[in-house]
Length: 520
Image (cartoon, helix red, strand yellow):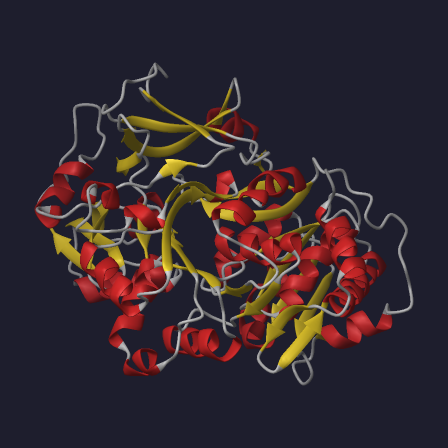
């Protein structure tokens, strides 16, 4: 097994003039990208970054994002991507929790940087991509200053070392740093060649944010497979359709919300997307209407649904295109998450006893795979709770396997809400709402939304005079907007069981009648 930066060296030697990444009008060859990574690594080393250190980045997708991902690894360090939709307090928590020595931001996020700069406990270097005129160290100047240096220890990381640390919000309301190693990606990415029909002609569109496991994994996939990647700055439906046409994209991954938006925009209908051979989708629920519309929109494209988690380095199951015929012999399979990938073994267990359950019986989904994370950064107890003896990872999702081995997601053990591909944990919002002086009790549930799949709804018990709009505004001051309730309902009491646990299934039931919240 090779480290991923060694893979990059190999690709640059074999295909120096092949285009590695396209960003707008800029095309970067493998030779040039490898050199850019060297410069990024040299700048980090000059800043005192070494093996095991963390480097945080807050930006939308960019070439600099990709080169810093590999540049950090080249000196044995670890990139920590940050969701650019987070509030400043959330950003500061992640940077401090990771003990990041360097924080790199895009120029449009300088206001966030200014808001958190004085609160950072371990970060000695603040760098801005396109930072001229912002009073901060400019990224280009920073890497240029180290261009002619070559730090010791390049490409010496062990494959068991952490390559990237992605933050996933926890049910306690505090984000957890998911540590993914070179070995995790070495296990996951070879499957792409076989399952996704990747070859030398592939042009892969990185449409998902690089702070998301899909965005990170596909960026790494470009280098791992030695193909050409098109980096989309952000997931805008019309812009993505134009990119598919302009660059003759053959492969991409999209969340269902984007597939829905693409069907509503006339500009998308006018785009020539016939080059798209394979479309991966997942990360949130999809309705049959959206899927049927997508199949009509892209009649020559093979669709593949995938299911996975940040902790499993992305996809662990896939539903092949052959099972995407709503009128075919197995229409029910469209409601499934597909079959386990060759490197993954799934088991359905009783959440309390870990007893394995038979086909058709709902329990917690466990996964044994070399893709399973190394653990949660600085959280040994949470790691031990998630990674069981024998190599099994507790997904926190509930579901069942049918007699043919297809996985069906039944519900979410942790009551997680997935809105437009973003994971939202009710406890985080509930903790904020309970800080309002007029709220004496509350519960957050996911309710159906035609645009986003589902969105958070606040059920509140009030002890003072406040309206729903004011409570939403209160949340927006403290949380990223996508996490905030889109509606508020007042009740006299929150239903709970005898031990005090909120009966969220009871709260959700009126909103999900006739719908399948479980489809991923």
